[in-house]
Length: 458
Ligand code: SF4
Image 1 (cartoon, protein in one colour):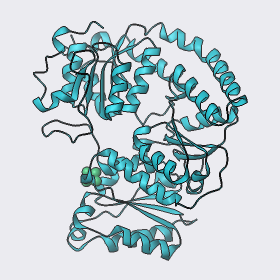
Image 2: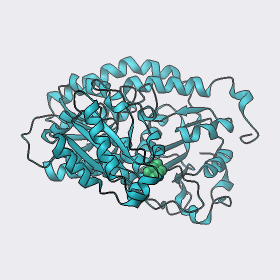
Image 3: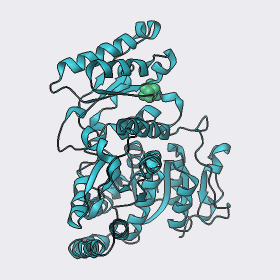
Image 4: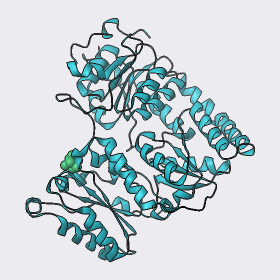
């Protein structure tokens, strides 16, 4: 890649302590990157809090009450920020909060929490079977015993009331994922279950109905889905999850703890899958078929892939022709998403030259490095100023990112394409590929950018 030579070691605008969190592929920097560390003071991280991490994972459980024990501000994180879709209950789209005030902080919020659970049970028919109680920062500080309140209310109402000790300060967002996984394990229990051939889909949150499309593929090749975790999930089906024979894991960042524990407790092996891009969809479907017996299942998977590719291929080729040779900045939350996006963009003929993530393991970054083009800059725990610096240097033709990067990209005059959980249309699956390549084309090839490019990118 023809990257600007001075960018390789020109990190004068970067905080000294941040330099080891940034690597340029093949820059001779040893190939490693510092990661899985706390944010460095002075760097404006894009990371969200522990409570947010827990909420992302659990909120798509459609028939659960998600009760935020804390000040009302924490409850601003609502369904519509992560609009997962439902085929059943819409209870999860409601916001519940104990709305803690100054008096509660002084005298404790346990009574308010107990009263809130009673009120919810009294007001909703049918009675919700499951309530998640999320602890926020202030609850961790004042020390409310939410476990005791949850136990008492479970016994009183005969429903599941599960505490999620997600005070914002107990770690970073991945800690929230882990706590959410622990809550799911509590819901599943640890009693051995009779096995039935089928898979659990872990880490798809059904944005734009993606999980239904994936389930359709699996059904066509003869694979049953036992439980969805957690897009379009229900209490009943989640409790059946231990009877599955295979966990297929889409978002491995959020589901790592759950898949490890389910293997340990219920003997369910895990298979990482990616339903994004021709290569990864094919590999994933064939591997699922092989793990569940092979033979006819694999033949059916290959037949499905051939039929879909024959249909989708010409459409993709048409748009691809208008994208080939462009460069892209990719900034996402989890490293696993970055890997999927790099691979997809490369299939579309687009070269990702700037890759930023909020979280990732050393293993994830090694994969990102291997899949990246030479000269690409890779950043762990990106900050807006670092993004700006490298956008100025690399001048990508388009920017694929989250809502946090949207304004920055647009102000710099870089065409922006959304890759976030508030998408209304599928991104993964063959159908999603068509949506996405159309978005890349109309966005990056719009004539408006001739006038919108600013002195920042010139
Ligand atoms: S839990 Fe803490 S960090 Fe998270 S939104 Fe609430 S107050 Fe903010």
